[in-house]
Length: 210
Image (cartoon, rainbow, N blue to C red):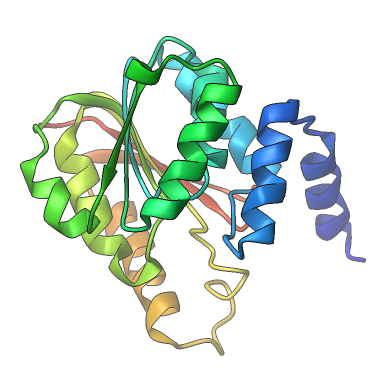
């Protein structure tokens, strides 16, 4: 194993997930849902805590792994989470309840994100987490930057898309969309961006202009 791969594995293995997150991860894998990695979850929790996030919107609920990591860093936050799969959201709702998260802290919206997002209030969220259909990632990020307040952050897990984005031989539509997103962000004066190698990439975008 290459030195960088060893370092990556070490960083991922260093994260200790609490029993509620570990149980949700197991449930996610059993249902064929790809959850964020432990390393990405830990970074999300740190960012949620560091920004004292109170209002969070999540695009892609899954069965609650990423939401539980948000609450690990910001236990007083209110999470609005959108997913088209109602069954997954019911699982997430149970996971939140078992973790002791009050029901009024998690607002789950079942629906197509691109239909729901235009109805959400602009500049009203401290943190936006984009972890849904990768084919729509550019549109999701555009909505995220509209919804997040100045000084707030948009987080995009899977930004290196299973290691394929860095491989010039890979040219499928999903890879191309992530490459386009990364290039546009790098050139934008409206955001500060950083790409972490945790998981299969975590893109962090802090809005610095209105």
